[in-house]
Image (cartoon, rainbow, N blue to C red; front, top):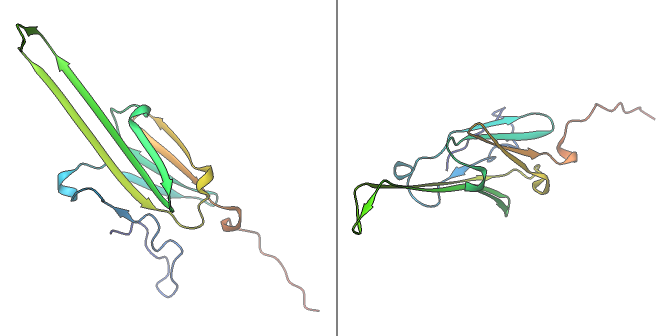
Length: 143
């Protein structure tokens, strides 16, 4: 498994140490083509962007189970030019699929994950739980 996000300070274990561990469950990487993934973080959410041009939103399947986010897609296309006496003069078909899984940190509110698909990019927004968001410092007075 490859860690996508590294620890920020070597002396302290990062909350993100194992965040978004990307693993291939089906076959080795040289047998499949996986979309490139960008992972962004702000104070309210993590955002994933998967480059998946040529697909439709109906081609994707996204689910969360046991703190693992899985994104997969499957596309089948067939082209037939002419068929004469039961024989094809040309028939082309293509089948492509991918599946990527990401281990989510405990700070993600998995019930509020949102997805969108625009201009060949699948976007996922993974909101942080309220207790994981940064808070203003609180002054503690000495009694």
